[in-house]
Image (cartoon, rainbow over all chains, first blue to last red; front, top):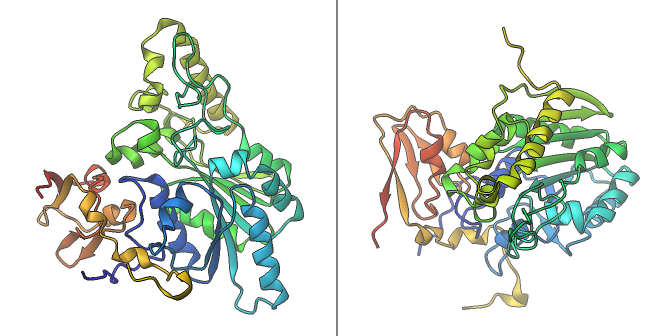
Amino acid sequence: MTIQTEVKELHAPGHRACPGCGCAIAVKLILRETGPNTIVVSPTGCLETFTSPFRGSSWEVPWIHSLFENAPAIATGVLAGLNSKGNVDGTKVVAIGGDGGTYDIGMGALSGMFERKDDILYICYDNEAYMNTGIQGSSATPLGAGTTTTPVVGDSFGKMVSKKDLLAIALAHDVPYVGTASIANPADLKKKVRKGMDNPGPAFILMLSPCNLGWGFEPEDTVELARKAISTGLFPIVEFENGRLVSAQKIKPVPVEEYLKPQKRYQHLYKKENFNEVLKAIQEKADRNIEKYDLAKDRN
Amino acid sequence: MDLPLGGVCKAGESRKLETGKWRSFRPVVDKAKCIKCGRCAEFCPDSCMEIKEDGAEVNLYYCKGCLICMRECPVDAITKEVEEK
């Protein structure tokens, strides 16, 4: 069997991600920008699982995984180790975690990392549930989405409360660079990774990462759904420097239906009349985002 | 399986894993239509697309057949075929 070595990516192919994985696209793009002089830290999650089976690591940069809850603390330790040796090569530390390890289980450690103002770039690929263990809801699961722990039975319509606002939590810690990015716009994603690395002190990037298995859509639609999340206003692409909004990607808003309808996790909302309220609430959330960040293109 | 001393894992060892075996559809590039824009290569989760002189080429050793390349191609140069084993 020939080993295929000609693919020039630091995130090697042959990894065990599902076909059409949004996270796999993201990590490939992120590592293209960070380059080899980087140490990556991951909490438990899809990324950790699909890149590190025994004798099947797809990392070609130094990479460390410890536990579900402590990736930011491990990153701090890696950085402290580098600094104690002088860090003459200027090696950067980047943590990449899923929404489970970031929004829920690693929240405390992440808050500590933000507070200490460690020079680490933390990137959260948010697929809005615990996909790797079987689609259990997380605090990143949005209102109305069905998962195995927010089931759709009778009058229950999936997740009953809305998603945690992680961007606001990062901003509340006075993180100097906070932004959102998307696999649908690789140039912007890479630009933000660069900014986050160059920025002294902590940086945080939130990235929506569609999961065809958990959300229920065809693998080929991964990038298209990431695009729809932006154009509906549900996932605004914004950037904050020192707490001030410095850029927001303008959109021509489309109804949230275009984003929700192709996904199985939202199908029930279109089948029962009394779920209309939920649909309305989702549309209102999108409208609020559009107003808050002034996303709509001027009509002229 | 021959185990390495101390259970050491090497960087990028996944390169030997043939994920192409998972495929049920195969993307086929019409090189006459391909404009070599590189969108398929940018979006491929498995880094299967390579832009060569005469157009995009699929690395079938790794391609899992997700068909994001087909969906994202701006000139519809990529179509799918059922994989026969």
